[in-house]
Length: 407
Image (cartoon, rainbow, N blue to C red):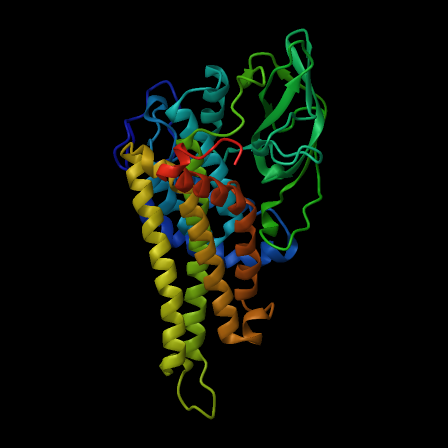
């Protein structure tokens, strides 16, 4: 059962209490994150104080299940949280999203070893405990598109010994737990995620992230050189044929709609800067703010219509998924595509409207523009969404069941 925030069970006497989520604090958290976002973008520095703010507001653990005395927030509340964080600092939002998704998945279907998850929650009760799945490798690319990882796990007594390299490891320098996708050196081979704790000997982060956008996400390379993990601290270890190559529909929907909300929040911040600029900019020849001109009013209207439509779609599908509607989960990929296109288009339009002012490093619009471009790289990517949608539409036509084979 999905809960809305404010309906969580009281914590048990034996477990430390998780911070209580307070969605009323979202505007303040957004503003505080935004105040430091330019600095972290410029330096590509990890926004540690930002995660403390998110933790203190109870947001990082909002999706911990009620079975673990957590708030049990559903997707509806999660998209609201990520939209607000994305408006403040999308790098903080992205790493927070990964943590929220991990807790939400565990709430839907327990997969973590009991003691390992309890240890994570005990840490999360007192400080930010960031978690992310590390799956991408130089040769493998994204596992969602198939293939076995090159990272290996060799059994040695009561431990697995991990060796390999992961790339694009979002938030690597600040993670408490790294869920490392690897294959075992066994016959038959198994694949799964190995729970690696920060500070484990042999674990290191190589600063390779030098991106155009989301610079503060510090999506660096992670090196595993003989990293030891207790045998029981694995998730989903199975032979490749039995291991899921793609997430189930609901898990995929959480990722699609959560990330869509993040970038819509970012685009909303760009719109807000634009409207402020248009009110403040008063050319001498005009003698009035640009906001008084019908041309700018219409252009801002286009941006607003696009963002309102995308926001409404994301919110509606999130509510339907919380209610258990499987059709809504199947449409989440399309919603992500539409939402990220709307977000990207809105920021591009804003830049076009204000010209040089939008591209100067002194204004935030250029940062919003660089950041929103990252929306295109998250799974599912546009080509996968469109191919799946096209095949599904073609399969619904009566001719699909009568066409000659091989044609």
